Amino acid sequence: MRCEDLDDLIEAVVAGDPLPAEADAHVAACASCQARVDLARAMERLLLARETPDPPVHFTLQVMRRVSQERWRVEQFVDVGFNLALGAGVLVVLGGVAGLLWSLGWFSIDVAALTTATATVAPWTARLMSEAQTLVLAALLLSSALALWWWMEGGGEPSL
Amino acid sequence: MDETPERVLVARCREGDEQAFRELVDRYKGLVFALVARTIQDAGRAEEVAQDVFVRVYRGLPSFRGDSRVSTWIYRITVNLLAAERRLPATEPLEGTGEVPRQFGSPDRAFDELTLRDRMEKALRRLPTNYQVLINGHYLKGMRYEDLAEALGLPIGTVKTHLHRAKRQLRHLLETEYR
Image (cartoon, rainbow over all chains, first blue to last red):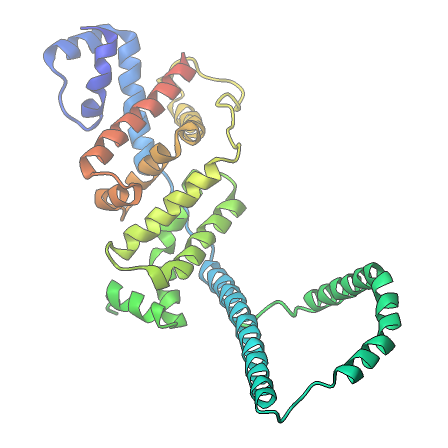
């Protein structure tokens, strides 16, 4: 028997099964294989005696907290979706009503008045457009500051 | 007190019963945490990952069809998260404890065992995730072959074979370090 052949038998030895006579004789005569068997037995003993780590005392509480946050996020998402859908629905209804009134002749668009109004607003619009980048940046900065303040105040922490 | 049957508990969780989910966490946290903590060395990270398991369970409950046991499903999530965690470099050299005994079985047996335990833990972390889960799970009280088989998506026979190989690889790592 060669030392490599012990590989297939070592698990059985560790499990307490007797070795075949030939293998037994080899192990008795081979210090290296004897050391391998000893190591395998020690490893099995240590694996069986390994400590089972217990979860921390507040583990369940922490999980429930995270689950609450998760639920809160989902609810927020659903709320935003619902509000957007509601807004779109209102716009569609208003558009439909306006279209109906217009087709019935109860409602008309005064093109001349519209042109005048557009001409009045045009300079303001052009001025606003030229400063759009600055305005958007300012709005973003303000929103970030407000969001940060809200977060620092614990606004994002839902209660359990 | 009698335990709520698994199916009932899951049904209550799906209805949004917070108390039922708490019960589910309490029921499985021991095994999940032990499996995770045995695989991830950093205690804080292990706790985070174990919590992640239950957050995923919560997210997945609406689509859980109940084809397998809930425990199996939870272990599968655990294995997946551990596999993902493994992508982070976290290996540690086996030779980190200073003086290394050249042969096991010297007169100072207690010291040998202590050293061996330390090196075995390090060697375990070098194994592929599946092998780690197999060894860590197999030696946990309460974890059955069936759970491991389903969590890893393998037949029971294959689990036994892989466990055998995992132990052989672990032994080999230790043997080469000792020679």
